[in-house]
Image 1 (tube, rainbow, N blue to C red):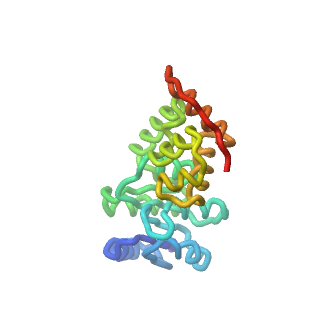
Image 2: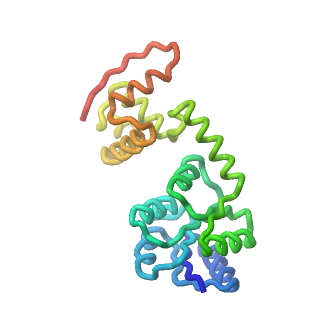
Image 3: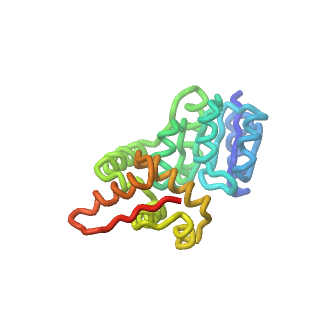
Length: 217
């Protein structure tokens, strides 16, 4: 009997998943309603599969997946979600998620997914794979499309010479959060620092005249 951990912040959904999977022959070793406890529970119970809601308080399903991959755990991961934005989809696939199930797909798809994942396979809906392929091609043509709206907004402020302290004030963020955003932007765009980021933004402004003032914190 395959051992499964489930995490979803909606009590009704959590109870429904537990009943469904128990009835299908899975052993539910833990159920949690927020993400921060999931990593400890996985370490404690060592489930074969973790079924994680993408949007949870504490840690999201994507963040938990990232940390599990960094820890090289053997627990396989299925993301269960009502919807998946572009960045989350591409990151989940980059992190080699074992399965994705859209909640609109119903009970049958979740059982099919878990049976396949528990047996060592993968279960990613074809529509998501096609969407990911289109996104990757688009972002190869224009790397800035990989940025979220907030990341793009922050990048523009960097290119205009604003310091982290000023950016934090402009966007109502802490300086620490600005630095986290910048590191994520550097990783997405494969640039090393503010200078390279500003130059990349300038190169995307076809025909425009812009003055770039570079400052460092």
